[in-house]
Length: 262
Picture 1 (cartoon, rainbow, N blue to C red):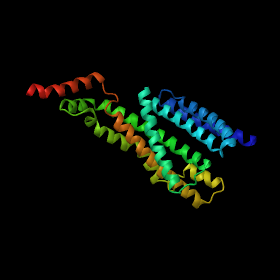
Picture 2: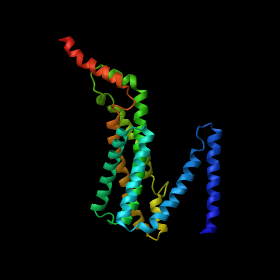
Picture 3: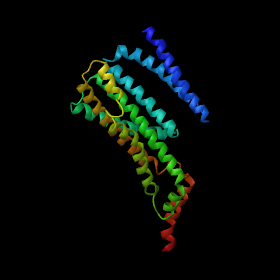
Picture 4: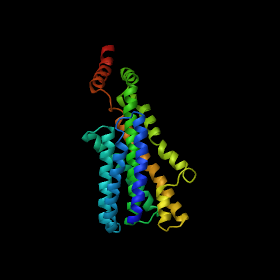
């Protein structure tokens, strides 16, 4: 094990040097973020490997591990979108809906064995991808709402509610957020070999069994992402990045117009 450690460290150092150098030459701010992320990931992987070695077959500890994963994922996604306690609750609810629907379908249909080992494997993958999709959906919603605010303001002036005025933005953000998962699924086996598939084969599982597990995972990623991103975009779009005073003024104006005309 020790003999394999130094080549690994060397490879990681070289790859990070490439990433940091490219970002530095490009003038990107926070160019060390990639190196920090990998270093943090390495520490976390080492810690989780040590912990899981003794608890992977205990449902109680697996449930605790999944709860910690979910909480960290929800906090991370909320911080990327813009932290508020209310928004954290929305992100957590959206992710919980997507993840719970996916895991329920995977286990109740018998596609996967209901065991702590499988729950941890697919649960961690689904939670991580739901976090990514929610982050993309929330950030795209915020950006588009900000960029298209004159359009939204015009619709509000014509009598539309904030939800109606941002409906197209929510739909576009939802579609864009699912593109990475869609492309990954479409190119699996041709462009990419997913980690779960490769890891299962390395663990001694037959390619057919590994493929069966992987397709369930890919379908789960799509389902969880769709549910979570839909909740985020349609709930956030009416309020995210919209000046509260402007919305209030528009709403008051819309209520006042019928009275003036009469």
